[in-house]
Amino acid sequence: MTLDETKLFQLLDDYSRRHHQCFLAEFFLDGSKTNYILCFRSSTGSIDSANRYACRYLHFAAANLPAVAGAGILSPEIRQELDRELPPLAGE
Image 1 (cartoon, rainbow, N blue to C red):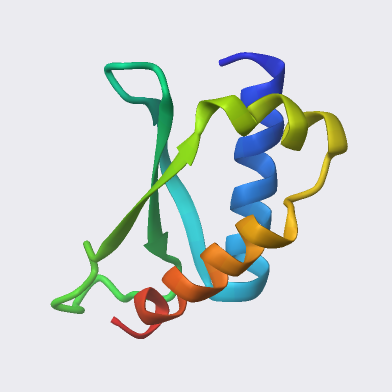
Image 2 (image 1 turned 90 degrees about the vertical axis):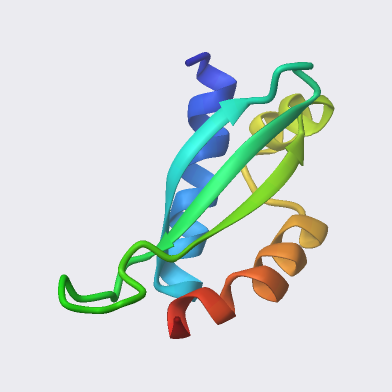
């Protein structure tokens, strides 16, 4: 993992943990190397829960990596997408 990828991973993981009781479980480039595939899982599920393996897959354009890593913060658009996609996961 490159330094920029590590920064992005940490930003996404920190945000999802603080705001949505989720964590970033998977982070990898797709076959075309144009998008990162992100897999978020709930951090609140119990081992006995029927939904303990519930997850949400999202895509992140690889072209946006340098800007996010360089700024050291998630853009409002990225935060809005996470806010829209992750809340249902914490309740599953």
